[in-house]
Image (cartoon, rainbow over all chains, first blue to last red; front, side, top):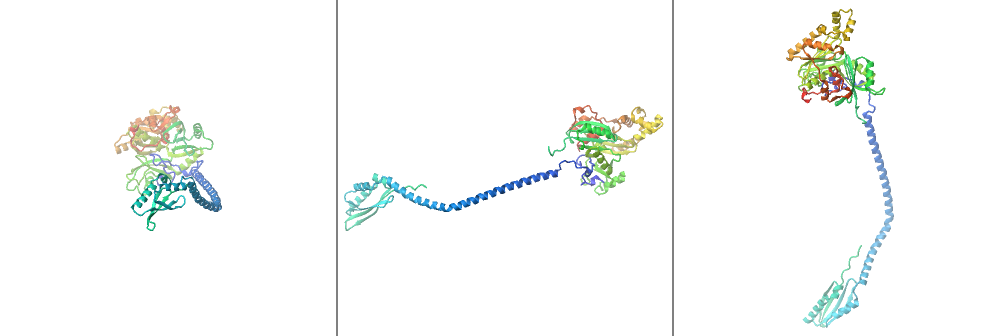
Length: 211
Length: 348
């Protein structure tokens, strides 16, 4: 048979790309001399890869199972701790409000403000003809409302009122204690022939309690 | 390395008369010829001895060798194909059958381009119309493989010794830059193969049915011997100088060769100026000179070592003294990877 017509035959002109060379062997009649076949090597490599993959997946599954157990345990712990936690939260809110009050009282206690001193100083600043009818202390750190009257209803009385208010607002002692001194109401009392006024002494807002 | 190929190999050329076994550092160049032993073909003991000397293989292990053989039924023929019919499926079988009377069913045949030596491919555009058919009977391949395995040799390849030898000679002509057509003779016992090759490939192939045995009756007659056996012994022993009767001995062969040469020269317009005998018993070396002088051509004496070096084939220091002549071209060709270039003299 012509070797050139038997392209599929292993023996036919194996060195076809080499000039003047023709291999006439009948390869299928030759013994298999490879100690380790390539197919065997390929199988070994594939089985090694498969084994490694199985080991990796098994290890990962075991790890996942362990993590699931831990999650369950933690969930049980969370469920058992939720009631005490809610109580602790409400207690904490209560504590925060109480703390605010305590801090307010503490601020009051340690502040430089003294009500008797306030009254004496206010009296010392009052010009003649000015009277304080009532002094309402609305609690620290809110404010103090002073209601009073000034004799007369004329321009002199108005000037006296303005001067008095200016004096209060520019007083150094009051500046230290109050954030503002404002005249919130000014009116005429025809029967008594006086000018009535209402002065609001406002304390500065306390700093927000730290959380 | 675990999957690496065998690093060292062997090359075995089983010629008609002599065989050569060589150990090489690698099957492909660059390689070094480490050992080489020559012995008579058919001498199984000498082959076993050479194998034992050259290899350290364990018993039961094969010796892996590139092999070339010269079976009596092996053939190399050259044909010019009809370009109109090359694509016909049965055309090549028809050519070998009708022109050479070779049965394409019982033989393993390869077709090579006569110019570049590559496998003939009819489907390739511009493929050569000059083709060299070479091959041998399937039964010879099977028997040879079986014999080699029995001797502990695993054939890495199995080639025709003559084809490899011609390939090597063409490669040498290309290396040397020679443009001369060269007459190549394989003087066998019963017939002679003649080839005309050049750097451009195989130009002519002609089997001549005159061999060395045909010279024995002439020796008997010329020397007046009683029987042919005595004449044969005398002829092949090289104990007598036959140079004087050379022309008488080769008369029939010379006639055939002159006819071939004349035909070639008329056809191509080129004259053959050199000759080489690739197959010839060592004791009959004088025949080569006689034939050359009778034909009026010179004997080609190739400078083998520089050529081998240019092909990345080197001799081990212990092999430097080795005589490398054209008779070893088959074994050297097995080590080479021939180029397809038509002239690579400049490479050297």
